[in-house]
Image (cartoon, rainbow, N blue to C red):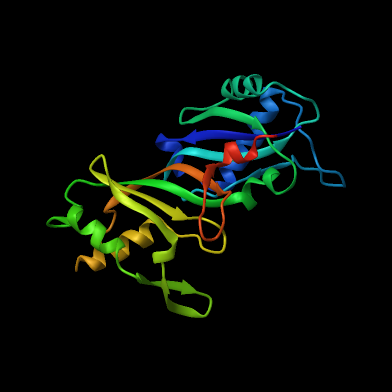
Length: 234
């Protein structure tokens, strides 16, 4: 049985890195006594994979990992047993049976993610920045610098910004998140500050990931669905 788990990561645990988060959940699965499947060979390991690494210091309401079990367990029971072992800041909110093939690999499915960017006090852009959001998005090209192994080069991130608008006094963005076009919220914000003619202050905002999506549409007309929906067995 392959299952996809959705969990939250908030509060102080946002400073725990990706590898330590993986180790934490491996231990939580053992403590919950779920019948986890292990690989073969001389160094067996728990068959578990996480969808999209979360940056240190970022909270998330929608993190995902896949795992395999040797027995069929009701999804509600999986959630309950894992939550008994969760520390403050981690919470398992849903589980679903994952489909076979590509839909059974959360990491391969990731296409986009939603973020909420909230400004720290006194760090918001000056002036009527809210009115400038549509003008910023209406640009045919939004270039920004990106560091690569071959040095710094200019890239156009406009195709990778699917949505950007004001929300709750901050900025909501939906960005490309596949391995080939992964776009960071701070990269977009640096470009937005530059568009406003300002230099982005250090620690200007904090970011929370709201959801992660698979794309079940076409190149011309993407159709984003949550990873949990994409992972449900038909």
